Length: 137
Image 1 (cartoon, rainbow, N blue to C red):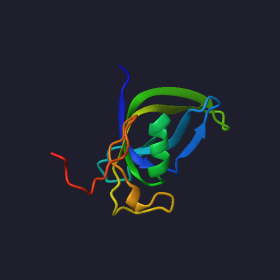
Image 2 (image 1 turned 120 degrees about the vertical axis):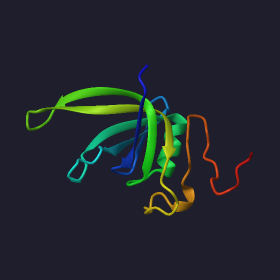
Image 3 (image 1 turned 45 degrees about the vertical axis):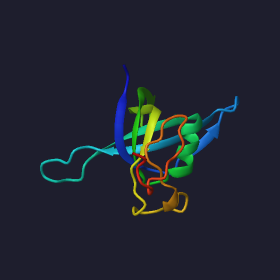
């Protein structure tokens, strides 16, 4: 089984594309901070490239923006490439199965994703729910 769960912040606004056969994919990068060191230096971060497909991708494009905190569950793959400086680098790519929006309405807002449009856990074939209403049970 190949499952990864990450929690972090988007480093830029998501970008969506449509494939030639009409499938929607939303790509974004999540920065995940490592645990702080003993001498309280700033933590290092790992960067994960995330691809959310179909309805999940459409919802991510609509509600996510740079700086927003998300939790992503999906399968991970690693690809390598040679950078311009000649060093070999690696990319960690996640095919999102679930995306949960963790930023609240009171968090710093961006123009592309207003506060009134935040949504909680989103899974494929689901629509956002109103988190301000009372629980149905």
